Length: 172
Image (cartoon, rainbow, N blue to C red; front, side):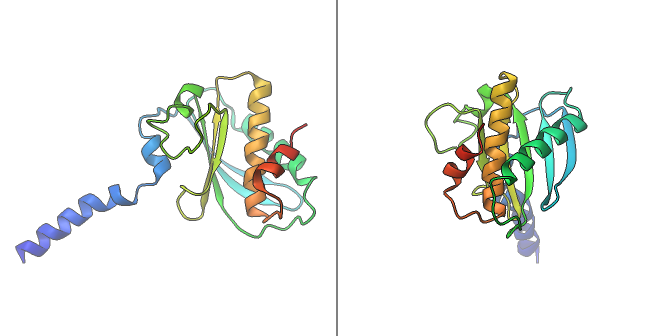
């Protein structure tokens, strides 16, 4: 009986580590200072965003409006306005240096510097993630947000266009 209790204790100690997402591991040392749960709703699409930022001064209404503007802009280029998949979006607003630190962000497959990233491959089931930098100029930030949201919309609406081509086509 003691062996079973000991084994159960070991399993319960190791299991949370084994099931932690790659994103959670990568962000475990990031000090987020603002969190917002958002519901983005357009005429044809509704989705949830869990927004976390290292910037304490991000107002909920400000980021919600930015995401809604990007979403509406991107949806103009989509023929079929029905979603085929539901993914909750985790959005992480972090410094450029952290996003580009490959020793921490081990799941990033590119070898060049980036301002943002969309990732559902390493997300928990039912979730997708966007990483955007918060210490770049506003135009770069807005363009990056728009580009990464286009990847998300491409996936949840099963757009029949390569995801990078679709995201690039959403630029001004």
